[in-house]
Length: 320
Image (cartoon, rainbow, N blue to C red):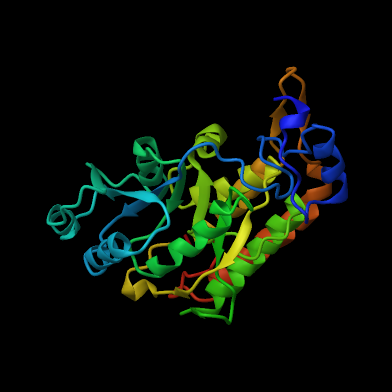
């Protein structure tokens, strides 16, 4: 595009970006091609949201959540893709009774893990952006339109719905809340970021970016892997507060303290992964010697914390 055809830079754009745009030069971008800071709307076509819902034995809430999602008022077109991950209760029958052209249901013959269900849903997505959403009603479907607003205004492409502890949230376990904070802080140190909620389920990501990252975790660890991959490639999510009402293991929560340790491993794996650049050169993303001490201490703390109460495995390491 000729330099003279560039639109005037936004008034609040950083000074360097204003100068570059005036000269017809693109400002800095992250490693995956997203602007390093907001530049205003650049989208060429309409937005379509693909809501990805993994489900496993959620007969108490799945019909209610699906109904709330389908009835919500969205500022763009959307689709709901539900993947029943081998449920053995009445979940398949309840889903079969819901008929809506905006919804499709896929069933795994055996339970393969939450990550596997999300990857299956993403493979069917036809939207421009994807958003995971749980079927347990810990999150509120009415918050989804609020996540879309900054993206539709051109402020960002990746949006996280974050749970601000003590604000519109209910946690059933102290360990759960503190564990999530602990791993969020550790991720911020590893990737030099400043996330408020590493393990929020609500991650709005462009479908093309999601597929380019090639996540591969099949369990609860996919939630951590997506964030680690984004941070490693220089993407910093735009955060929007959402409401949250956790449930206990007795109420059906499936995540345990073992998943916390797995999330820790995924963060380290992605931070220390070797990056491959277009010219074929590889570079390490971190120095294991510098991280070894902090990693050992954090892992010991997590294991001791989770072992303190065998009846409560809600160590918040992850809360997808």
